[in-house]
Length: 140
Image: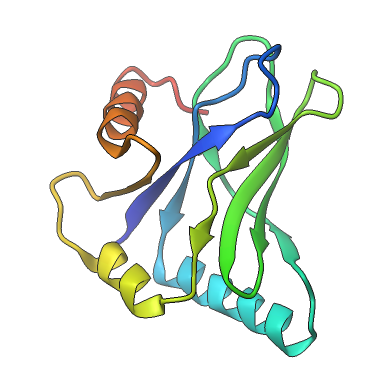
């Protein structure tokens, strides 16, 4: 069984339209990859490790996300991508702490009606937005 991780984003600029969230399937393979990248960061003393990741996001009219990445450090991870038609504008998700794998595993494994793990300032609002966009096929 897998869940979808939905994470609130920030484009860092009020002048561009950017997705409100990114989403990724939380599978055992994804979790294993996350732990592997964290191990690489720790064992080589790296401040961060970046890798390609397949992200879904809210459809936006003017711009498209490209170069989606997962960024992993010794204690957290987040997602980032570039807005294709906005010079030097990066969309970045909230970071998620990996300092307690037991806590993360409990959130991954927690039963819920929609198989979503939402990370946002207002989790209920983002959950509703994601489900609404999913229902009307407005997720790229």
